[in-house]
Length: 225
Image (tube, rainbow, N blue to C red):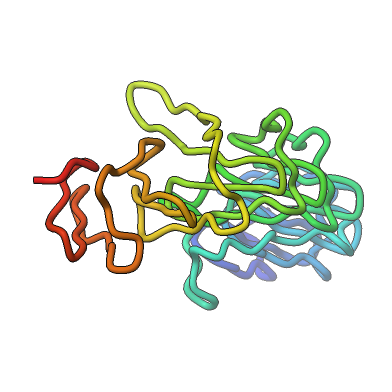
């Protein structure tokens, strides 16, 4: 029991004694106290299993580990920032496997909120669901809201619902972003997925709050003021 003389606290939620491991006062089934290790967030492991809180989710404890979140600083990881774990066979979000994900190459794609976009060598995942027709290996962030792969470009449109909108006509080889909502290629400057008329490619820069400027003037929401 948690009140035995051998009980040791691991942190505010986890503890163990010589025969059992506990999460919030509940026994973690099959957990081995001698090899039990708290990882981060909801996750822990021992020599045989990987756990989410007090549930076994992996039978490959030796290879069960956190997938790093680049938005979290090493040594200062928040529980909210730990979303995914993996073993040799699967990627998990909490207790649920991410269907079709390749554990060896699965990684976050950093974005404005950090937690919902990921990729592997084959696919891109948004809220753990693959984006149809998007190539994971070549996928990259251009700005906070612009993305591209070898075949096309997209903008993440925020509103009452979030939409991935194809962005046709972009020169992919030269497509690059500024900060959040503005991007450019060799031909045009774009606000979201619209051409910024009259913008000067050489001197254009995004400032803040949907604003930008170049040698010709100031722009708000992609329109010259």
